[in-house]
Image (tube, rainbow, N blue to C red; front, top):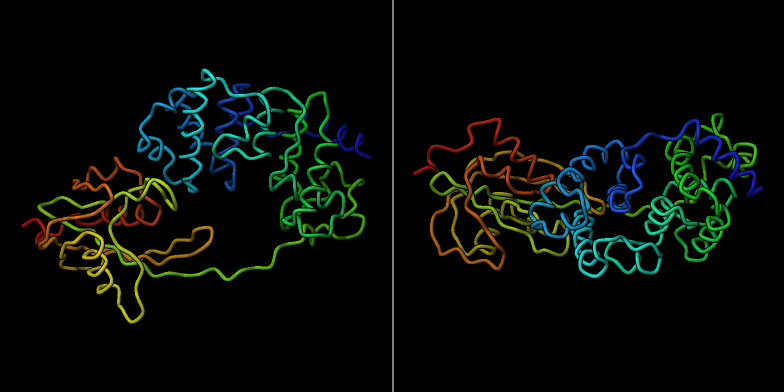
Length: 360
């Protein structure tokens, strides 16, 4: 069965495999960048970001020596910003310790920031043509259905079983195409909700299909309630300039810039919360004015509703442990912001940017 799977999959890939920018190169650095970008992000979204990133940072050394703010700005909008920070951390190690050359063994690759076992296997097999298994989300789904695995794939024993299957399947010859074929089958045919079994080259070998389980496998983890937070933020004006602050380098949205603010406390309205947060965070008093916009945004583990207000700096020596800038409205485009803040900036640009009273 395993030999038949390999043969059929490679034959299908030769005819149906996707033509993607990172498949037109054998550069390990380019393949690494693509694999990191593809984590939790769809191909169609990744392509323009990949092309811009590679044009801006064509080599490991270019990425290693770039300012973090520049890296985050190029990444802006792709989300999961820890990926960008880890890419640069790993690039600096590769540049400093490996003469700019991507390592070609699993152990060394997985010691680098942001590279797990599956990403390392993809780099090894695709860039170097070495036999190495992968187990990203698409591959995990294909294998759970192909072998009718009825246990939750997030459980450690099941993961071990799936890794063993993946390792047995990947051939010594042409592991690059085989692993890419597995990914493509999961993305194009063996979709999460409505697998196109009639078009699948492995249909007659698929145990889930033969048992009518293709729509119920893989077994899903129990759903968790996603918390929803209300956030108040102030676009603080002083003499025609706006105050922005930078988030800590590590943690959620690390290194990005934002308008000061925070979560509403129980019993507060957004206006009260904006004034309090500005005072607590910056040690300044601000007059909270008109609502700019209320935007909603979903992160991976929580959702927010952001209430953004025009605010005028009133008094107080600005004190904060975070970097900050007073910038003109036009300069906002030079900085990387989280998606919710960028929605506010879009609204600002559509209207009269600066309230006349705030210019005084």
